[in-house]
Structures are given as structure tokens and as C-alpha cells.
Length: 159
Image 1: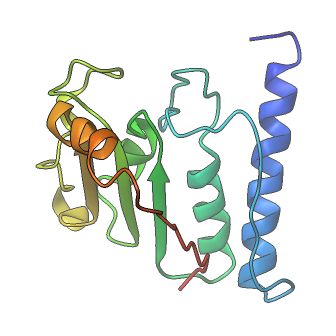
Image 2: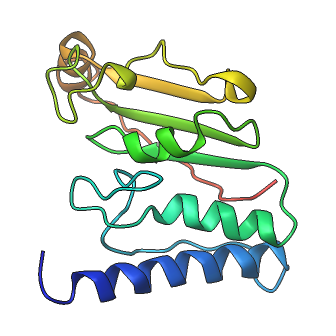
């Protein structure tokens, strides 16, 4: 953290919200924001893991304010996006899909809620999908099919 961290994090939130609004209003067809800090550990009312504000949650809120009715958030990171999950855990308007290292809760953020069986509650039941990578999965990813190429085709959209 630096003296300018809050200012930088506020700029990241502003960028996220502006892009979401611009997409929903059809001013731009899509967007990709390369911003720091990332935000996925920040919860509804607290910072966590160097994340001061949750950019994905802020973008989703902005999109809802401008007429979107459903949002998909894909979080592909070595750490679970625990803040994003917490914010939308009871919300059926947002599908949160997280792929992360877990190792039976031994890897940060050390939360049982990072496991595959935490799927949301109440209205949000079934709208939280965790794909936790444990030692077995990490080993097979690093040793099997070493000659393969992997392509991730991300077509961003708000529906």
C-alpha cells in the first residue's frame, strides 16, 4: 500500500463503472479493463487482500442501474474471489464463476467457502460456482498433456 492507494483504487472503480454503463447504454460494444488493484477480495463492507474496493461488483451495480438484468462474473485467479462471492451470495441476478487454487482450505484465503459446495443461498442458490484446484488437479495440469496448447477465448458480454 502507498499514500496514493485509495486514489488509484477509486480510479479503478470509476473506470469499471464507466465501462459497464457505456456497454449497457450501447455506446461501446465491449470492454476490457486492465486495472489495479483488482478488487475481488474486497467485500460488501471491508477491504481484504490488497483490494480496497470490488471493481467487478461496482461494475455490476452500475450495469444494473442502467438497465442490465443479469450479470456473469468470471474470476480466474490463483486466489479465490471471496469478496465477490460474499457480495452476490444471495443474489440471483449475478452468476459468480471462480476458478482458483484451494488445496482443502490450506491456501489463502483459507476459507471453507472457497470450495465447490458453496453455491449461494436463498435467491442466490445455484448462482455461485467455485472450481477449486487442489493438489491433484494442480499436479495433473502441470504434468499431463505437456505438448498441448490451451486457448482461452473470452468473449465479454453483458446479458
